[in-house]
Length: 397
Ligand SMILES: *Cc1c(COP(=O)(O)O)cnc(C)c1O
Image 1: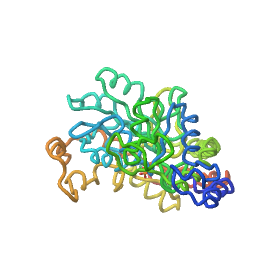
Image 2: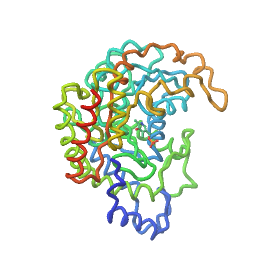
Image 3: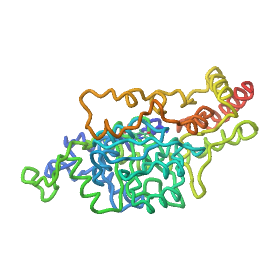
Image 4: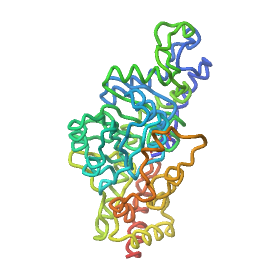
């Protein structure tokens, strides 16, 4: 990733179709559109690729999470369990619905720790939201069993893991709902965009209505459509969807390139005894968008990260002190810096994250380094990179 590295003729052709018709709207304008329905094409293709009955495209991954939660009827005061290591979109989407984000520890998979999830369940819990960070997944069998036992929904945030699989099934298709992002740096990108997938007819019906002002999408006269529910505008444009159509068709190609590059780097690093790779749960296969590993201590991780930067190895992240991805820097959440007044339910139920013990998450995150795998590298470049990485890490030990 990111998919923009390999933009080419396919993307240009799809965009040109939209420019030629002038129809940027996913619904209506039937007579003008020269038969092009890019968003519908993206949805059909994604549903098929993800082995899901339904896919609904929206304006972003954050929108996808919000729409997915809303479509399952999540509302004020209900609790959604999410990991301490994720992207801010996780709690943004939960808060947008007046629901309460319950942060829970991660383990050496860098995703939700099942035992911590079970401990966090209350009578208000409605959803468990694992986030498949950096291309690899949570222990989904364990989480599914917990959800079944407690009557909870499983919503997979697969925004960073499209193309990965678990027990042979595409990530995103294993929970009750799955979400993808096609933002500007994701494995497949269309600038801004996202999608919800589900096998549940009811959730799908809710999702397409909710993301388009509650329109029922019956008949072909938008002005005469009913609006059975309240909704918002989370629509994707035809221009973005057009790029998505081209990129989705190239997903397998992208994953194969990522896998090749990842494998070369991993092989090189595997000879350093101090480097321990993140755990991928049994039955899981990553999408190879990142190579993530642990150093023996926080200090060694910091020095290794510094050495990598100094050696000119770009794209290696020390997420522990990253602004966007780890709870430690989420002051806007922990201090509830909202523009307007928050719903009473949220104010009353939100745990005091300034005081919560996330030492288990800290233990893993403080030792973790994750390196981005690019699509544009030649094999020679990856080999050179591997050498530089080994030298940098060894010199830090
Ligand atoms: C990118 C991302 C999102 C949100 O996607 P946007 O399209 O940028 O809104 C959500 N969750 C994770 C894990 C992400 O990486």
